Image (cartoon, rainbow, N blue to C red; front, side, top):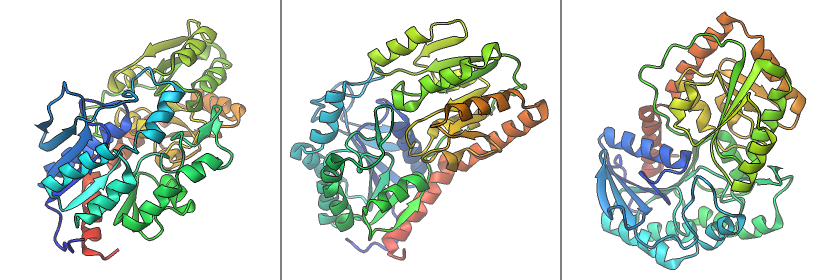
Length: 404
């Protein structure tokens, strides 16, 4: 470590992908953070993987982007999703590629930043060791369960894993050793994800801090009148069993014609086909891939019925920014984002509780609706890119000073 005591002038972020390759909230969150750090006057570099069709180096909104050409032998993620075999190969075999890790380190060494903040990309254990060997402090941001679970979601058979699988305990042990040895600091996007890693004994000596994802506010959200009957419930996200779209449909449609449901998102073809066959009816709209802003303008409430512990809940913040309350499962990081002022929480493993929550929504009066919408717009401000960037920069500076 170089013993840098001054604020970082040059910050380098690593990830697997970066804009315009955006397949989920992680890529969007990283882009918002990078651009906000650059807006605060810092030099920001991003090192990611990328296909030949994209420039190897370019500047995007004040951020220098360097792409590695090593390729994706197990396939890029896609809106339709990969098979379990290909997902497993990407997660378990993909990182153990010395050529890819060496390529990340080569670009980091050439750029010589003051601090490196890893997210995804390559063999993280060897990457952390290599960065520290260059004399550069390294911080890691916990955005998912991937360092604890080979599947990456702490879920199995459409619900949460009842206990850590022996394969995950063995397969992820090396990450804990690497984290304890090499990391200068750890950021968790929620208290839940940070505590889950601490409980597993991960990186016990590293300073840790919760800093949420960044979500831009909507500059002029459209005023929203109280909903009429039928209530328009919306689901926006990956269509996989553990996300709970099927359970949402069962609960909502059991309440009769006072509720309609719009399902936006894509996923494995067999599961999507199962849902569309089972719920082929006029009060259900399978919208496919949708722009979040356009979709949220068409619903009264966004539902997040996850059956597994969500690391954060970025979709809830996007809904807040549009003045849309959220119906969320009381699991993972979601209760840190949604409360009784901005929405409703329910037990994800009790279908009757979900139905009761939807019935409560139907009974909400106009004044309570307006109060919730105002609370949503206010809550969205807490996750502004500038605010998140300043908190992140404060953490970097504390790590460099060594006073945490």
